[in-house]
Length: 397
Length: 73
Figure 1 (cartoon, rainbow over the protein chains, first blue to last red):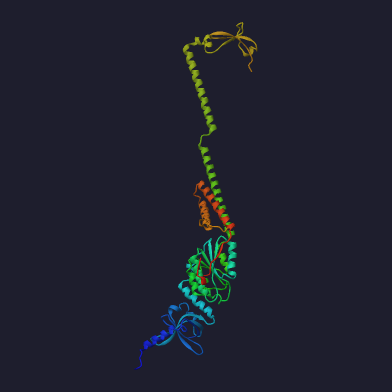
Figure 2 (figure 1 turned 90 degrees about the vertical axis):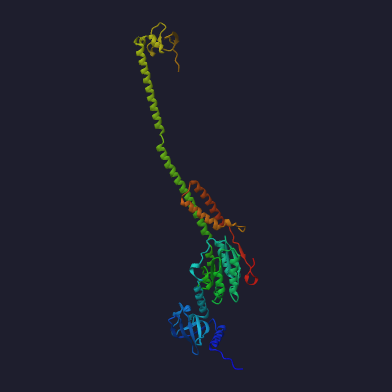
């Protein structure tokens, strides 16, 4: 049986597939020195990564190298992240670079930077997707370790500042193997199942390795996917995790997170007081303005309404004028009558008596012509037109 | 206070209404009667808010861990 003959392309494809399926050669970090650096007009960057005993051709394609090119220069010591592949057309072995960090960064830091760049590119840290926290939360969720000081600190701060909110703890291991998926599950569970309106994801201080779970993709995705705003507080102020970057608000410590999620009831009480006094002031102002209006109206009313004393005076004046007019009329009528009945009639004492006059005499018929001529007890005669009556003077007090 | 807290009596709701009342009062386009009835409402809201702020104890609830027990209410 003759040996099988393979076409070159079949061999190169097989080789490529072999390389790309090998987990020791894919998604690995490789350290070395940069040489033969060239930038193609296409924007791709090619270089050789070498050390004392080996060299590896590297391809850093344009879609990956944006923003990272300046980390590469001749002789630079770097660590690169990527996968080994084969350029089939030429049979060249090539390390396809995804990410570059200066050598000496440390493995964790380099990996952190790589992930940060990837998530950033995906838009997970975009400022425009950061949500603001509720002003007065009703239920505050916390994902953290059930043991340790973190939950205690949070409870302490919220118990003082904002006890109106219920506090719901979803415990999760925050360190060690399995911590990342457990934290991610806890975030999804509490945000989905509980009626919370803000979530704190917290962990106390520790080494970069201790905090590593909060740089793992499941946690980052869970925080990103949370339906309620997330406040992260992982480690100390100087530690930054990817969970911090993806969270809506980053707090330097768990206690600070508790202060961020809720207002202080003292200052809120003060604000309520201010609002109350403001309302009071408004009503007082309103009343004052109504009073002022009333005053103005009253003034105008008084100006336009008839003045009572003046009116009284006018009435009195009218009455007087009427009286005078009436008297004049009477007088006129009397004179007309007098003219008509003739002088004689008017001069006759009888006629005068007929108009209501009387003649007073003493019993001896001598006339009494003055009120001073008589004294109490005097007897007199009064003659009307139709008869005589004897009378006596009597003082009436 | 550990009893029921009706949702329409949430602090947020009361406070929001208090702010609204104060703003309306400030707007000024009100009759005296409207002002006074709004003011009375504002007083009640403020008292209710202060009461909520004054005597309340935090309710704390610890859920079961998810990673080995599965999530349960």
